[in-house]
Image 1: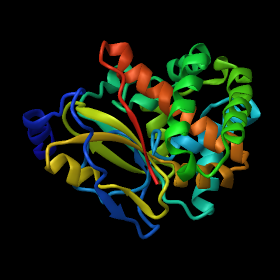
Image 2: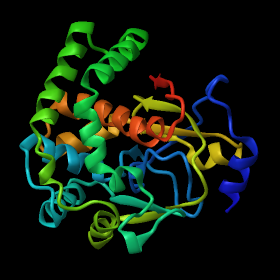
Image 3: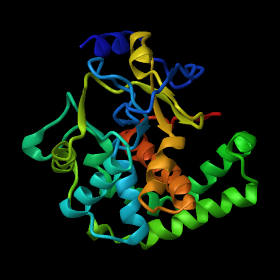
Image 4: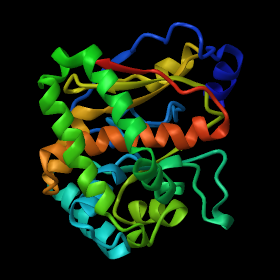
Length: 269
């Protein structure tokens, strides 16, 4: 409960300067964490992706328009494990397993997030292009190349049939545990004030340290999200563009749809 107490005392207002990125080095054997800004200080920090290990499995399903059921998730989590990635998922203190929710926003609201991505294509594309124009050198692509990445990723997302989503929430996290995933339990309420996109390999956001100093931030380790997604056969364009699109859609569903101000996106090269 330490993390919860500190954040509730020191939440940063959205109109203030975003917190600095507190870096931690990774050895490569840590379990995946979610982009969630809360923490579980009983488990070592790991690379942050949407829903932890669920991120690349969802992109794999989108790439092939596959049925996202237990069999599909089992198969892809096994492949991630065989490819050398340590699995991770999470629950939180607002979980209601009796209602099928686990308090991982990505797992609980997966269909809504993909639908949001579809519905808000114009706005999400605009925002991502704005992010690119401020960070093009760090991203390492020309503006036309980056625009094509987003367009190509959207082709796959828009072709994906939402009826394919057969598992979500607590069921989905339980499938992860059944495949050996480490399950975090994140305490407290959300107080994120920024969405980091981290491009620096072998590093992540020190979520535990951030909470200890009274700040929270969403963080997507894009370098790892791409590596894991591509290991499942996802194209580079979908691994990059799809990750960014779903990350923005997740922020819209979890933050803006709850009446809060859109969070700034900060690229960390």
